[in-house]
Length: 463
Image (cartoon, rainbow, N blue to C red; front, top):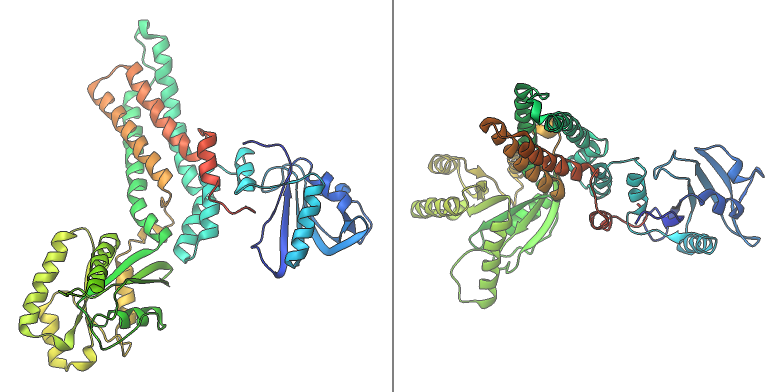
């Protein structure tokens, strides 16, 4: 996996555009590119200083392929930590392919997915969690996901883990040293300080583990299921939230027979709204399949909007509604449920006040008239705990990191038990080594080719 050859790939999206960037990296990158580039100044590329840009032409046997700008990175002063050349050419697909084919014939090979970032990790430019953040940054589609990826790529998360690992490693060394002097019954590791350290590590690990609940939904978008009886305005609400005619709206009950999904960003947070089939008893086979999917989407959703038609709500209907709300809350006790009354434009002030007094925390709106839609968006933001994000605290978004943190916490709790029960140093040392192992898995101090292959296979080719 740690290849020494020179690799090439298109670093910009494939297809035609104003410009394209072709990246070449490896020990022979400059040697390969130099004879293919004719500078307008007449200077040879390989004699130029690092971190300079040069105007000239790419030449294939005296045939000019394109006028380009070449960026030069010598030695280890590059993204990959090895000599790198970046060729900015015109964005014609034909030109891109001609230059890449020329480089392949000259001694390069096509880069594998994520191979540039893999080399950056191998050459010590990034640790593993920072390298993974590169992929998250490329995929970020909201302010919040961008902020988290940037914080991780700048080393916030890995720095926190590294500091804990270094402190734990120091105590582990002292305990291991005690084993060498077991017959003399000496104690190098201060048990009081060690207890304080284990307590602090436990607190940090629990905070990081808890942050995953927020980080995961921010990274992937927060799914919100819009449910309710047929013809209460679910599709109209979806269209109002998205500000486009995404779902078919009809006076005929049961129009929506399948789930319709779309995403928007509210306050920097991505939300994925799911318009579901109306819940009712029906003999229509297709509609029943849609209703079954509705309950599946409720299971998957982070937040549930229960929509009602306020204009059709009788006193008997209010009683039934309270029972239905109670059923959903009992079935999904951990899931935020927001009861929303639609079509309030058809109510008078007295009816609106009665509705507020009958149902606690009900949100009133008219999706058709766009009344209360913005307030609903703000209400949804309240369900997302972004305090840690605002305070620039570390938020875990990666499932691999989350799993390693859980395993590290389990081993740290074993060490805590060992300290409390007076366990011998040799047994505690085993648990400490395991905790250190899981810390190392996060930052990449402990890796395997299979692990690296799985991580970097998810990158784009040019990164």
